[in-house]
Picture 1 (cartoon, rainbow, N blue to C red):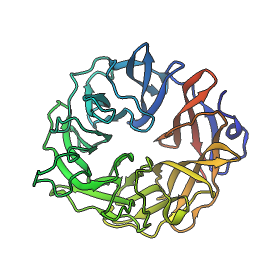
Picture 2: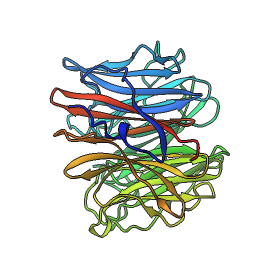
Picture 3: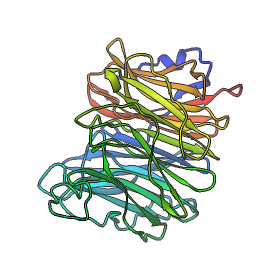
Length: 398
């Protein structure tokens, strides 16, 4: 079963063209990630070959997709629908791909590994582990973002405090941490530092950079009272600042919703999208900041009443936030897109595709090249998974 072509025929006020783009990946591929750099689209994904998992990538220019490149392969790679490989590009053109490798007896024992390519993905260096901790614990939900000409900011969720009883250095034992480091394009790692010592345990993280180079990290936080709202931390020349809460949703939940935020920035502006279930009401919200993420204005709700979440976001040149999310529509998953305004919110939501298969589209990912917006997701059908990609061209009047 293929995604419904509803969006390709609809009358759109936001886009002047919507079309399917052939994926560079074969049938059976899943969990795509996207990023962009200098008018080029980059995608990573996973494939299963017998008992082994392959981490793959390809590059799309105006001439089409490159030959898919193998980044890493093994029978001990961690495969998960929510915690999956990602791709980033340094300003100098070096490509970084991260993935997860099993390291212990538990299914939650895995580490983050990163490899670099200096030749467009043809060859890859030896895997690097960004975290100092090597204990049998969860290290995942990583994000990477360019931080200057030859540096990359890396963040991840880190379970080193679990079971570490008696360690006086751990102020929040048995809690997941958000940690970070810097990675140079030559493969040198910086210090492994803590951003937040108590966070939600399995929600995706997200990174962006403002015009002055400040790095913004968005993640789902966690309090002693089990409030799991969204926080943002800033990395400046002085180091990581104390995180700020984006909004007091007050979502009390004794477990992880596996539904992380998305952040983007342009100049001094930033925007965050997220899912919440506060007060037993499922909602997708977007909040804006005009001071580089130091604080955020009152959010606007953008969903249509029955959201799943799984958001992504691209801040547009006019200060609006192009936001994607998944919502239930007549028992099917609908992938929505909307241009979100600071005050008016989502005026004209549009459905990009409808999935009526028995399995999920998981976490759709988005990237933008000027007026071209690309979305990629795992598309299930009766034969298994494949990767679907759609290209939407923003209307000039928008």
